[in-house]
Length: 115
Image (cartoon, rainbow, N blue to C red):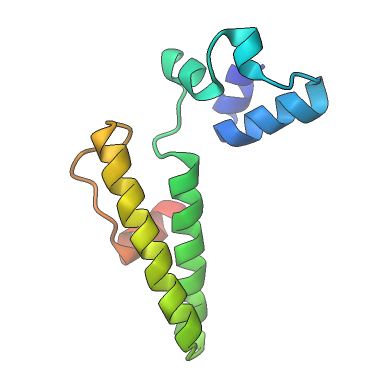
């Protein structure tokens, strides 16, 4: 069931929530002997980019679209905060070899990645 959901493009966090809410499995580690991400890595079904990084990238793209139409100083500052978080996560995941080592955040390129 986990592999089926992963092949449909469901992120690991959503898989864990589905197991908990719909199938009464509160902890996948107790059943599998490992976490959902470890299981997907073992089965080579892990998505290219981690879920938390993709969520931040989507948030940054939405904020950039908002700033194209409005002059919003507060959101401009918050966009810089989100981009800073993305930079820290990229550094972490590159060290863990979860994303390619030379991958850099570029606002125009990630907008294509998200769409």
